[in-house]
Image (cartoon, rainbow, N blue to C red; front, side, top):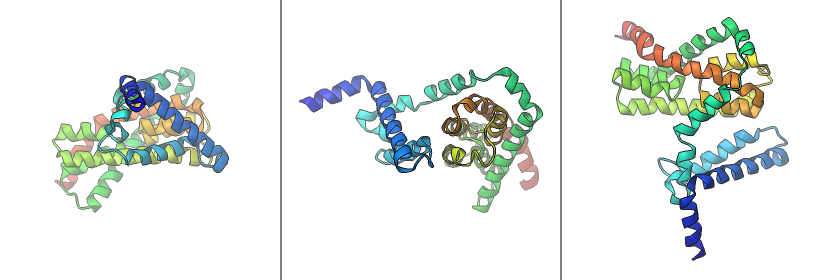
Length: 250
């Protein structure tokens, strides 16, 4: 009887329970970071690894496939993701954004171009030769948002689009975990550096999470250019980059 009441309570308040669960994971991660790892590994990185491990207990949607954790599907959905990205970008100061200047603009084009063609080269080495397939995978290497938009626009198969999304997700995870670990060595300590970093890497989710674990004050600046990166990738990948691959590979 108590268990039934518990399940009924959670089912009616799934989103609140999701917030509570995430809070518990973050709290446990902070304790591990301080007590066990002496803050050598950021709490955010531990939380992400722990969440990925828990997701293995589910299926397509991770833990959200289990009834009592269904609220995680809402909390982890696109609505909350986009809301947080917009909210963090709103904290940026225009004066500091202007200081990024040419470096910020160049970082966007360099970042999109490098990610796309790196993805294309890896896909080609794996045996993919069709231009549509290469373009979709290369776009996915930019971000997991650019990938499906590009793949749909050029008519790539759903399997290849899924592979491109996977590449983008892996990039996001690596960026999130690696950013706080390498921040000091690459002088990622100022708004200007955060904007260039966001422009080069581009994956908004990974950049914002990684910068949050590094220095929360840098999040708005990295999110700002990373958001533009996504838009630029959606413009370049299915048009100019696709055309270039057609010219070189037929």
